[in-house]
Amino acid sequence: MFLEKKSPPYCCDWITVVIFYAVMHYFFALLLGKGLLLPKSHKGNYLDEGGLELAKKYFYTTKNDIQDSLAHEYAQLFEWSCDIRYKPKSASFTGKQLIRPALQILERAKLIVFNELGCGIKYKTGKYVFDKINSVELRGYLERMLDGERILI
Image 1 (cartoon, one colour):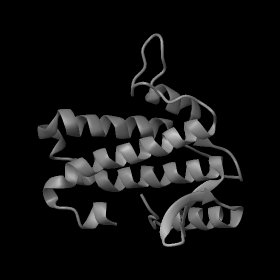
Image 2 (cartoon, one colour):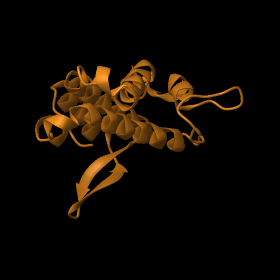
Image 3 (cartoon, one colour):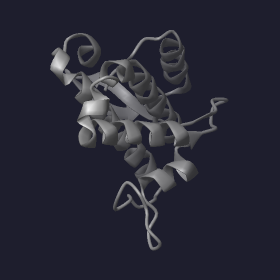
């Protein structure tokens, strides 16, 4: 994958930030697919729940004999991305080490969203589209993910 193998060394820290925002967009797709409103911020206040609070409630799947939750990992990824953006000196020591765990969180996010919404990324007519996915395709995705293969961002 480009983010892990081809990016310049000075970008290592920021790859985790990019992955956080990719996961966030998958999570937002899940929220919208469930008919929920998107959060106004990452962290909530006394009036509104933020993305971190909503992840505790909704970033999971239990369909099709697949059970997974990303509430804690989503919060961890958020913290890593904040450290990289706002504490660059301390983050520079850990940036490259965070790429693999962040990519694993991304793959799990995709599986949760694909399973819950019944849609996934497919290659059709020369481009990638988000389209209905059947149980055979979902199982294939799960098996490839468990084997360590990353599919798409």
